[in-house]
Length: 250
Image 1 (cartoon, rainbow, N blue to C red):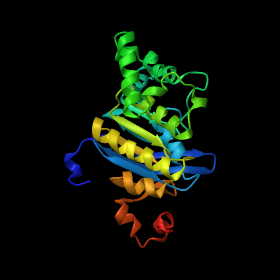
Image 2: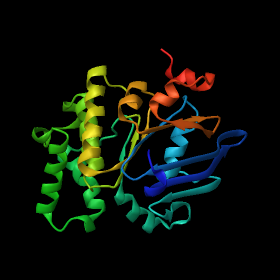
Image 3: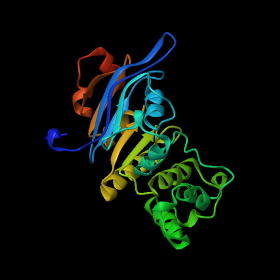
C-alpha cells in the first residue's frame, strides 16, 4: 500500500515461532495488516498457515513472538479480555463450519448470545440477523437448515455470521475452497463489497491464485516458516525467484 507509514497497523505478528518437536513450523514469521487493506497470505500445504491462524485466534500459543491486535498483545492477555477483543474480529472458517442442528437464524444468533453487550433486546437481535443476511443476499433463507443450502449459500451464511458483530477485522481461511469457479467468483466479489461497505481490514489465507489476484492489496508468501517475500500480485507474479514462481505459474 502507498504511504504505509501513515496508515494504522491493526494487526501485527512479530517474530512468531512455533515448533512441534523437531518440526519448526513458524521460524520468526512477521506480518503487518494495515487499516482498510486486504492482505493475502499464501503458502504450500503444511507451510504453517493453519498454525498461524490458530495462534491468531487464541486456539494455540506460539513458542515465542508477539501478536498485537489494535495495540493489544494477545499473547499476554487474560481470557476474558481476549474474548471481548474477539468481538472486533470476524472469522470465516474453512468449510463454513455452520452448526448443522441450528437454523440459519440460530447460527447467526449464536455469536450475539455470547456477546450480549453488543445488543439491547430481541428486536436488536432480529435487526442484526436480517441485516447480515441482506448483506449476503440470503434474506429468504433465515429459517432454513444448513443441509437445505448449497455449498455457496452455506459460505454466504458463514460470512453473514462473521459480519454480525460488525467487526473491524475479518479473517478468511480458504474462503473459496470446495466451491465451483462461478460460486468462488461470487464469494470473492462479496468479500470486496463487504470491505468497501464496512471499511474492514481483511487477512485472507488462500491457495486460490485467482482469489489472490482479485482481492489482494498485498500478498505475503509463507515459505520455510518465514515471510519469504511480500508485494502486490503483479510484483510477485513477475518475480524471477523460483520459489515465488511456483505459486503463480500455470
